[in-house]
Image 1 (spheres, rainbow over the protein chains, first blue to last red):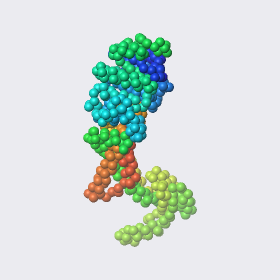
Image 2 (cartoon, rainbow over the protein chains, first blue to last red; image 1 turned 135 degrees about the vertical axis):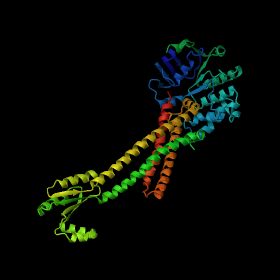
Image 3 (cartoon, rainbow over the protein chains, first blue to last red; image 1 turned 60 degrees about the vertical axis):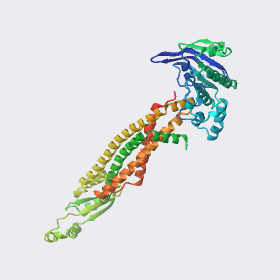
Image 4 (cartoon, rainbow over the protein chains, first blue to last red; image 1 turned 90 degrees about the horizontal axis):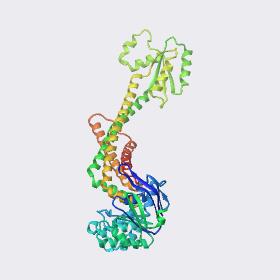
Length: 227
Length: 285
């Protein structure tokens, strides 16, 4: 479903952010993407949702290729991808429900669809009672749950979670991880970028890909390397 | 209300001063065009009045034979620009002079012979009265040996046409200058609006909004600013016209279609300025 084929991404000033990385994320798979800060995790995420194009190599996501994709197709591709970030990226002047609804509103969804979907998703992430709260009235864990409800609104094939627990305490981290696991069990693939090795070690059955200085140095799934 | 329109209107609430300055700049540029438009339109009216009276008069040599005159008359009648050729004999010319210049009747009465030449008066077709056509016909007439002299009011005709081209050029240059300034200011306003909404735009891009959807509110903002500016310009031009007419001299108001075009041009100007700003600052990948 997601393939990186010998992908290198070079920046004029800082050099290679990602260097000759190949990986394959299957449909419905859960995978940790680990490495130190600056190892290239976020760049891999940005390459997957085509916010950046490879300097060389190719990225293929759900039938779209980085070599041929057009701007309008990038928008369509992103409706198949959910996003969670360390800083949540919620609109501060909108309520939890409005933040979730926003993702549907800007893709031209009908009001009826928005009305029926938003409460359902807030309930799914355990925030039905806080639909009318502003982000500033929510804890970090709750804000990340709002972001996850928003990520799920288009029923994505994959959720790209870029350090989603980076700003959270241990308990909230566990809660978010469990939520991502349950999302994964319903068939959505999850790529979970984190430098929290404790979280990785606590889940030995989960596939782990490690980046170091932009290079893929470890993949617990053998077929993930040989793409 | 649609999302785009709502967001466009929010932009006015967020930065009313900037929106006001943008509209005022468009208004100023179109006001200049409007004023020159009045000048150009009135010159056109004058020219139309003048053209209606334009005729070419060929004074004939006294020794021209009737056969020469008849041949010349036939030749001129056949010209596409000529509607009618009227022969005025020497006697008729004298009679007309006596009738029209009655205060000089004593002078005419004391004449031993008739000093006035016979002439051919050419009336041109309504759409064939431009300076080039008139001059071409006059030259053709003058080339005939039976013709002594040709008169067609060439000096003032050229001047009126020159005035019209000067007015048109001044309108174009000044209007374009102000339009460029207006585009730059609207561009700045839109860039500020983009900056104010950069987080929202980033999220829109992430959740799969198309470029067009993201651009629409900004284009609408530019369009509304432009239409507002165009309407202001129309109002200012109309007020100036009223002041001019009541205080200085009477002029004719421009046609309603021109006013409508001016307002729409304001809208187009605003939308183009936004389009340029948005294109430069928003791209998905």
